[in-house]
Length: 113
Length: 113
Image 1 (tube, rainbow over the protein chains, first blue to last red):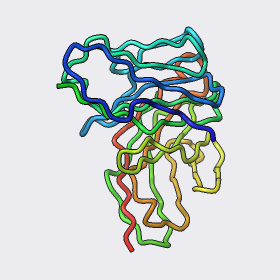
Image 2: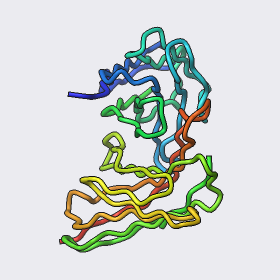
Image 3: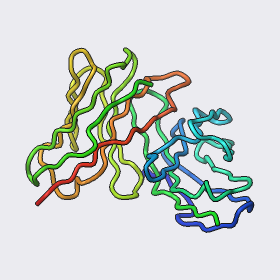
Image 4: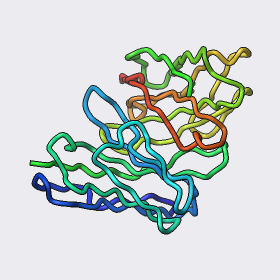
């Protein structure tokens, strides 16, 4: 089944403890992206990647890092999480041409205390 | 990417057609109109997209005006499971900005029995 898989689904962590949220897609998509969703602010793009080793900032990149060493994986790294990064996170992927929509993962609910 | 404007909320009776409007008056020639929906806190789901011509798939129809400044998503026979937030998004067809996907606040569609 074509899908985007995120792990973990739920995570509670403490301020300053580095964490990684993994994202993997099995559709051979070139584009991958991370979003966060907060009440009243909607979905905001954190980072996106157009292909292996090519990444760019979205609208809210501060406090996050990403890497794209392989086509199928696009992990989101929080080097020193803070409470304002408590949010619902989504990973997504799409083909590189203009005729495809993004496929989203099921989400990761992160709480930083 | 061009900004979109959608009504905050709409209601629809089950079995009737749901027509969701979207204004994108600053859309440029190489930008597609995409529609997604999000049910509760699940990952957004791709519905349909188009450039100039009207489009139809198994989920919905997309009607784009001739001047491309507005569009309408039509769910022909709405069911209770179509209750969701619907997002209209304008996205460039390619290039470095293709990866960016900016979500607005969307339209909350409530389908009533």
